[in-house]
View: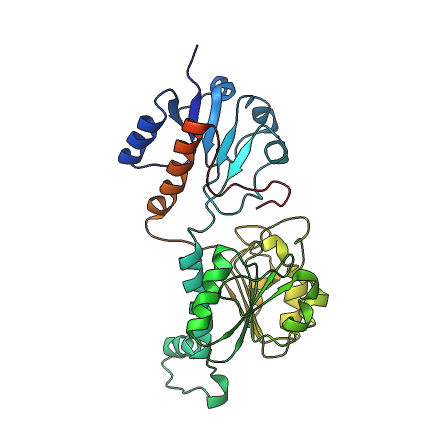
Length: 319
């Protein structure tokens, strides 16, 4: 009988391949450009995902037991996979926490210290000092964070280092380290109205779709800044475009969108008080070095016990 296949949909270093072969010696290791459609029925473990798989292809993965997503979010996986009780899913939650946090504070610090303005003035050879009232400090400001997982906690930890008040929003208001206060989603609007900075780390689920809508934006104070580094589907893009254009709040930073790349026809490109970044806040130079230990730990557990040990996705929640 042919050996079951571990299908790798992303690149790995040579030494990492050797580690996989050592741990899973009873399996075939194949990359996506080596595997044929006839091999699909022998795939038991998959690392990463290939968006080129067709609905017909999905029916052939009859022996698939585990997908190790190469990302924190798994909303891009088809329902044929996420709703299959035979398939377990693990993600890379946690590896992006530091670079995303640095990006969030990069946005805020560059704005508060008027670095963006200075850069634009430099392009036109202008020595202009922005008015004193245009600057702001992070000290003693209220930082409201939707999502109190690994990323939210790291943002809150650094926020406290800046002497900010940190408030976390999660499903039930449970207390979480680095948050001075925690509230449930249903009780969050009172905090929204007082927050100086709001950061969303929310995943894309049925419950979070367009959570940030025209009614929600109406609760922001005029000086508030909004950051979305979670998932684009959580923000109603028509609503945020309207609210920013009308000056309902001071500005926004969006790294994620409904459609990526963001279409040239999107009105978001033309909004002055919005900074668009191309889904880069979690990027780091040596991503594979950060993610491989999670896969390795899970692979060892799977081979030795038949169970996964880390970053198991709760399918009913979507994260």
